[in-house]
Length: 197
Image 1 (cartoon, rainbow, N blue to C red):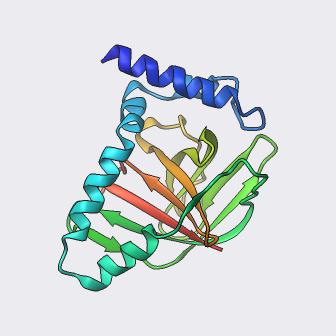
Image 2: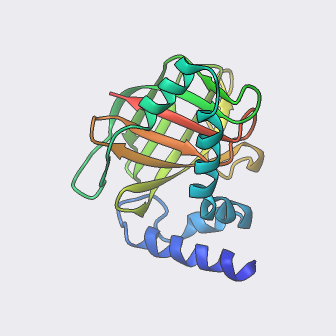
């Protein structure tokens, strides 16, 4: 198990060091990530597939149709000068838990460069978040963020480990993005935050 975690850390280190413009690309972010974080990241595709398969079996045709719409689209590279900065509409789909699939309404999110790299913020709703993006592959970025509530000041990943959350961002050919959380903090087994321009 330690060998697998070490391999994941080495792979992440190589990815971060290869993207000089991202915050904490010197590897400091790796010291913030726990072994559990790296294990969850290794399991991302497996967790995603299991949650989607379960949700697709629901009798709620409207909710499943929304899920299929969110999952549609061809994934594009982030390595072609793409800049996601700006205001976005965003909505959660929560998979697993009770009910197995929940589709939420639209909230406001934004993406901006704070001088150290891209930051994502969910700025409305009772549960909000803020975090930084790091390169995993040409078409996947790692989001390391922190949950905060509307009455609280935003936090960063690592400020309170109980509020840490991690996701993978993909860019789609229809202008949308998907931020997918393989281990949500509560209520579900897998979350998708869809971004609509």
